[in-house]
Image 1 (tube, rainbow, N blue to C red):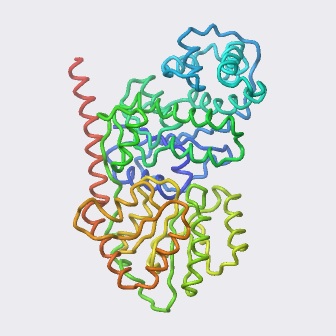
Image 2: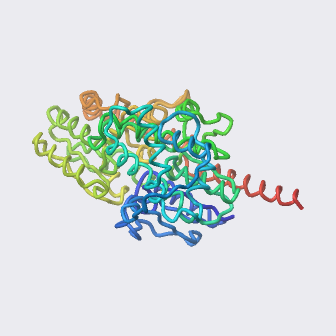
Length: 481
């Protein structure tokens, strides 16, 4: 079976997390062919792959969201939209009602539309925007509204107009633009569409926009509503939604996903890969090493980690903090983190860049995660497989991973509220000063990983999922014959 994996801002251009999950999936399924449809932020990332593909990855198609910067529209066109199409555009822009995605797909891919920018320079779009401003944004300057909406929807329109590879099954690993591509593929080809949500994409975008200084206050709701609309497209068209833990399922239902579509498949880790490094570090030099397996980006909230470490150093001066992961994804944020270390004058913070995690993991005493949003973080699963205790924020499935679901296994770490650097520091200090507790939590984590979160269970669950669609397709073909 040919399966198209649709990824946004991850595989194969970014390492870790979702990217590692995708690579593990395709590598362990040699019986299927995979096409990778990679949605990438910038054209400058073209071809900069961070993974060596297995032989069953037969094609990689890149689609760049900044392509709209090089597209110029012709003004003055009139496309004679139907009432349904007008309402669909209005709904996409927050005017209320449901977005009729099929009509949008057909219009934006119509041959009469030379370029996506043509529609945004048309009289039809101008009329829709005037009505929207009169109804909801009467106090906002029209020119600001025009350019804001244009920059908001052009990447979406470019995405909808892109060439979609043909496949037997489409598998998106998030909602957002990737979810829209999955919905579009099903609309075009009628092939089944499966969605896996690691984190809740629309909630993550909402958090980013609330904090963003590039979005003016009166446009924040517009942007937030827009991303929720994109998620609705995926929920509407998908045949099945796979999520990683129960809290995600509850949120998806709150956001309008049909609960009958949702099933839970946890992530997994190859526990045997970490057997030789499992347990406390071999060297006993008196240094307590804290490690964070993480990309240096805002959603991982490295600044809170640094602030907490400054408090830790007062109580445990021999502690060191290793931030293990790439920093080039958001260079401005990385510079801000370095500046914070300098401002706080806190020694012992080491940014390693991208490394072989196992080489460093063996030397770590405690693994940290300070994210403001997560799904089921691979870093925590790796720490559990390596029998390392964790201190994490209460995001995604961290509480479930570290405390279990009445499995009879004790805690594998400590969970603290998001952005509370003082509580994060207090938990770290407690573990730093209690080697016996660290070792006990490490053993609990390894036991829980073996019981519930092995790679074998994860791969077998997806193998079964894919098999159901393959056999379902055969049944449909024989029935038609």
